[in-house]
Length: 426
Image (cartoon, rainbow, N blue to C red):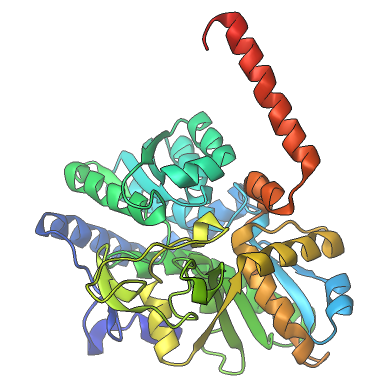
């Protein structure tokens, strides 16, 4: 099935069932054609994948390990719980898999400038890291609201030499950052590559990002067989656009006995309307935006709805077209987790296993913890910990109502204000 997804001989290139495509201004057609040609040439060159794996093994801790969660398993009962540790990648998330691959592709194409969008900031940090390593000019677009809640990542992007542009349009989140990137690309395509961070956007981006992220699933399948002697009963991954989910699912798509579960942002609850559950919430419908067709949260006139999630990286209106197609085929099941469930799952995981998953990844933990007790102790489930929670310290501390953290922040703010007054800069 994995190979069938990318066999376009029997259908329209860049489509997965009814989803996908490249709905872009005519001015971008030639640039996308150039990118498709470069990518097709690279992926059919065995040396390219070997070069990619070598770079990831020497630069980003690949293969990342699988951790057995003994305490969590005993506490919940039911299935044995395993975690794929993408948080151990350089820059702290799965995002580096994609950007290092696209960086190698840029080198083939001779592009000297890279732009990217980011929500949670992990893709922005990874892109800035790649740009620093390869000597590229880098600009990152990030929604103003996401900048406020992911300030540590903004700091590191800037230290790495990237120019971070605050997007003040619309909802000031990931959707608007993607729009800003597309506008930049139209004006700079001759020397610029858009390193789109997820399995969305116009063809070939969904295909290309899944290709690079499939390293997660390739490793995980082999590791689970070696560690447990069999394949997992279920594989869980959070889904915003869906790059980490597409990556780990890729390793198991042809194994019909393995259930694949994508977990979307339930926000404040589906009935509240403040969520980003496009499929699990039953409120997404097929539409076209940002260069591709998929399930979007939109009104009857096709205007995009506002979204909400405690996790900046899941706060997005659409879902990758490959995942939308796999849902329609019944291969991927979608669930959602509310902000409250996510924070509780994060607390449980931290205290029981000493793991600190990102808020995005904690959605997968929430669903897995909900379902594990219903399974047999002979079953094994696998959770993709797509990122680590360092970046979420402000959001999590606020959600937990940590008074000592608040006192620390207030003290720091008072100290900065005092110092500024002394310098006469306030």
